[in-house]
Amino acid sequence: MWKISFIMQKKSEKIIELKRIKDNMLRKLYLAFIAFAIPFLWIMNFYHHFLPSFENTDHLFPDMTLPDYIALIATALMAVLVYSYTQLYKKAKTKYDSLRHDIMDNIGAVICNCHEQCNCREEYIKDMDEKGIDLIIR
Image (cartoon, rainbow, N blue to C red; front, side, top):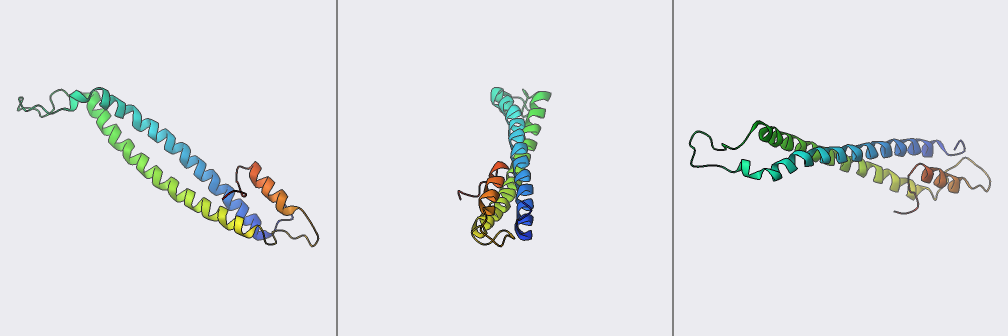
């Protein structure tokens, strides 16, 4: 990788960092969705607790217990968290894809400091592929 031009080295470092950020955001999104699903399933299982009662004038929801309130609040908070992680993931993926396409467009040009026939391009593509970055297929 030492023969690669300075610009390609910087782009490589940046895309590796963006891939790490994108993968971490996807992992957080999965965990947030699981955390959303658990209280949501509680609400779906005990949905009859959330039905209003018009016979009892003291309380609109007389069957709701403390776990029901906790599940309702947790579901709302987790829904907001899932939404925010989704937006952050989209932003990270857009940056990653933009830089990946830029590298793919420029990989046909001179990417190394060699002054002779070399296989730096193939080695670079192989190295990026080993790091999980596909520079072959758009």
